[in-house]
Length: 248
Image 1 (cartoon, rainbow, N blue to C red):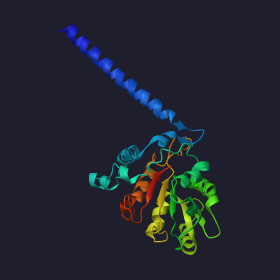
Image 2 (image 1 turned 120 degrees about the vertical axis):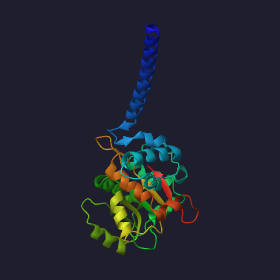
Image 3 (image 1 turned 90 degrees about the vertical axis):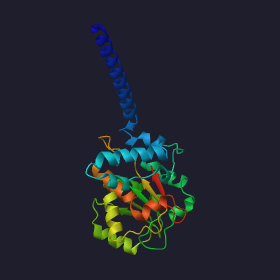
Image 4 (image 1 turned 180 degrees about the vertical axis):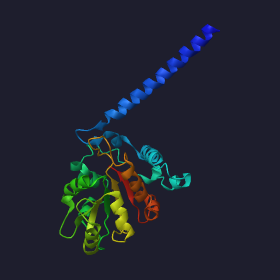
């Protein structure tokens, strides 16, 4: 009997050790994707729509602990809603963003054009912080022309009143902003989604603490609430007024 108990314990220890090694290996692999020097989480380069949908759902469940199951289900994004960009071979840094947009636009030339309606961009780029958003604005200036502004829609150094004024008087093709500020501008009807063709989430960028836009509650929850707004969610899979949902 004693021998049998010892054998059972040894087996349990071996299984536990194997599981621990497996978890440790996965942790090392995940850690290997985090290139702090480049400021990139390289895992997003390999994620297709299903992997991204699962990843986002896990983050929402992790941070939405105060939400009911019904509320959580309202924040779900299906794999079919997400555009597959795994074919893009270059690092997803700020310098390669213009080329990325051109590759996944049906008509790249139109990126330099602005819809006729003021404050109604064709492209929204969503960043996790104001400084990062400012960097992305600079990288996208190649698309800026006399009649097409790249809008700065983030909180750092800009009052919401200034942005409301800018949107009301300016034609803008591309707008770069942080999640909560974009929500605020949509809800006060300064930022129109009528002409929108694509939303690009700056998901790969990480800070010195290895955190990206989906890794912090203060950015992830506003982001998912933005992406699952009723006026957007149906358009990800619709043919009419279609919007591409893209994770960069």
